[in-house]
Length: 528
Image (cartoon, one colour):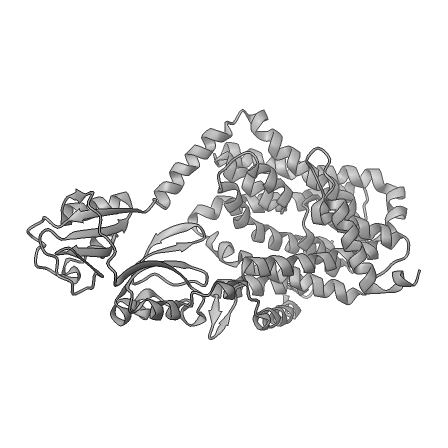
């Protein structure tokens, strides 16, 4: 058929059929987007092929968008509270690699296939990309295709069964974590206090150092029945009502300093407004509120910042990030100027600037070409996959260089990532399809069994260490496990058991680390 020789037609045909197959659920389990590679394997078996350049374009888009999204969390994970999670990721990926090497030697499996089994068992498409680039062999794709199905199903079954087998109450574990989160990020409250302390009457807000002493913010003041924006020079008089924002602890400190709480509200005057403003102006990103000096320039006060679902009390040292939502108290005459300063353009969040994407990928390709020689016989390079990923992680952490924003909106990131993944899987599948039947006939059952072992044994080792040695909360442990296995379906299974966000946070913390580590292990195994 002439159309089957047309690469663009075949590409979209595979994607379309893959999505149909991926949406088929058997007892609540589906292959989702990964079904594309299995459809591509069938097409490849019948002689259909797609140019390799499409694979590389898809690969760079997929890896770059992952790095851009994971960058801030990747570097934050090196803080003290992430050390245990990182250790477990090293244990899981390291043990999986050692088990793969041992099984390959014992059962005399071609190392290219064994590397594919490793990436398939850990359901890592970036790992497969690194394997294909390193081995330059379609056998890695075949190993991946054989091990992947149980890699998906095995993780789901494991995380579902483990709490029951271990006798763990998921609800109690969730409650423990909620208490810990509240201690780290206490909920912000609003309270009104009446100035009654004679020691502060007649003194300015600047003299009293209320923000630094209490960690609470004054959002507005009512003096003689009139609502005013608090300035550093504002004098507090007895009987004034002060509205504060902060944690319960911060408000209590302020109460001791200022006076007793009152239920009387401070109405908004006709020339005063409190508004939520979106940060979309590139010029203010990475600057502090102190540098912007909105209070002196616009007689406006930023009282809180909402970022990634968390409310933060604003201070002069608070750095602004693209996409932040700022609660601003301001006079109506200046509110338009404040909106202009921060951008407040929701459309910009959905716009995609391709210059930083193209530039980042170019830098990633160049970094991937660099070679580091440890000895005469051992030369290490990040390759295309590792170079693009590392550069994306670093750029995402930097956030902004001059007028260039190294960030993407969630919708843009997801679209490009999905497009890249579909292109990559389609080419990889068709390339491996011509070898699949022959390899599976020769050693298919053996390889499938080895894939099961590579999936289960590292999870068992990791879960035992996490539970009995590190004494981790089971939700953090399961999130770490699915992140180390790079298993999004596994994370979905954990999320279905709890309303806590802890598993997703743990997953995001270790996911990029597990990917980088697996890529290194793939390169080391290829030298065996």
